[in-house]
Image (cartoon, rainbow, N blue to C red; front, side):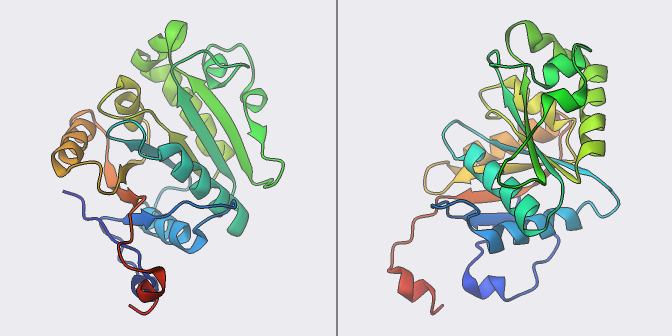
Length: 231
């Protein structure tokens, strides 16, 4: 099973080894949160893919409600904002979008540039949706079309982040894992049990994906915060 690393202040002062990366992430307001943690995660992930000029990373959870979209958004904001690297955040959805997304690019209806939107606060960050539900579900079984979309995405941005549906409740996450350089599994602390995480790992790897690591999200501190700072 992929090792979970708790990024405490003590660990932040050490070199993060490029093996089995994972992160203990604590979302809070305002935006651009946990920058040190996010940068550590990015460093660990890129260390596992040194020869890839553009990296496509899928973030997914085993089950619903574990904070995948929040972590994906904050990782994208941090890398695009703090490092000024071009980042494309793709939200994979199963319903019909309000406006044409990357599924329309796959069908040749619009150019790639028309499906992405630049973040008004962080110019290095662009976002897009990829609808894979309803009449677009066929894209999941048409590898060539998805390959073409992600090839364009990889040329567009240095880092492509896919915010995917849960692995164990939606075939979309499994199908997309085959198109990504690797998968980061978001796990809510004290909620998702080890057998469920192990099941998700097996599904990802059996489906042809590569599990890069686990992000431990929403870990609860059971002693006062000022004590953690002394550890």
